Image 1 (cartoon, one colour):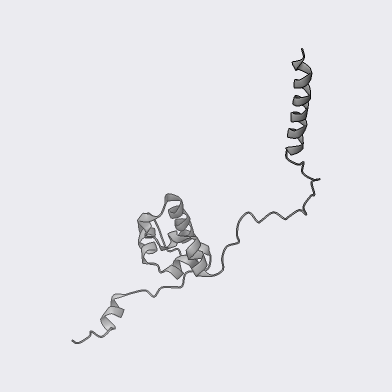
Image 2 (tube, one colour; image 1 turned 90 degrees about the vertical axis):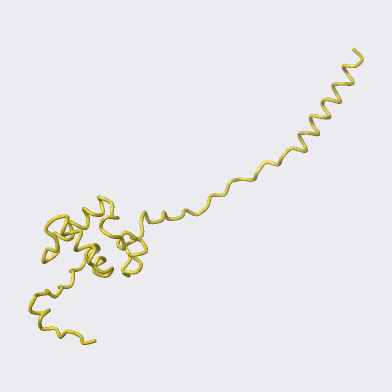
Length: 131
């Protein structure tokens, strides 16, 4: 039993030493000023170049469009004045023939510029180039 009194003070000394060497408790928590939530989505760009960067599908051929994109384009073509497509085949032909600016106006608003009608008389009246 003589060992018990020696071990107890040694054990008590070790416990106190480990307690003093332990990590310090953090100070009181200070609340930060609240920040506003960011907007859920960016407003659509006004510049056609920016819209093309955000919607790269505008530069794709009809066959490369997803079904949802095709439906969107077809609906816009039917609503256009005058209507630019009667069915899917004509919508594909019209889409592939449009330039980027025309596609942008069709999908994101604005009327398509009227295309001059090509007639046989206009082709006959044009002079043929001589080599």
